[in-house]
Length: 203
Image (cartoon, rainbow, N blue to C red; front, side, top):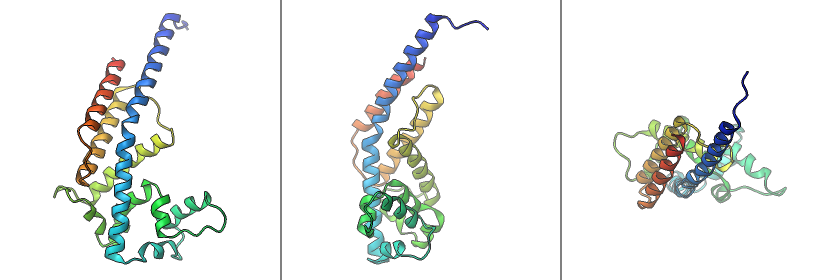
């Protein structure tokens, strides 16, 4: 087997380093949008559910005898990083939880239990977008969020990686628009600039 030419190996390494640098810049454009989505989604759900279904609704879920609910699973994660004897209540769940549990408010079973309340947090939701599509988009956005926040996402090294990022960014921007959260034009322009730089480096 022929050994790779040193010049080719050097060029490949330089290209990979460039793609790593550009990818990190591209990924950075997601963080402000994720912050807006997460804080808006969970705060609106928390206060609307308490208003519609009762002040004790969240505490009732946390104190339920069922051990396999999304609330109990999230509570276990939170309590593992708290001192012994810490008591988790509804406000603590709001503050300490991540995006994942709030996305599950749109899964079929929990949504039904919540009597369709979650969808009301989207004041600008198009009429043709229903719970199932919302859950699909939120889940896709959550998956990339987890990869980003836990440093599990590799550099974008092929066109399919770029297409996935564009797709998720579109979903993220749609969700923010439907929530009626002002993002300005900067978020889109910055993403487009970074994605174009990655595309050029891939050529």
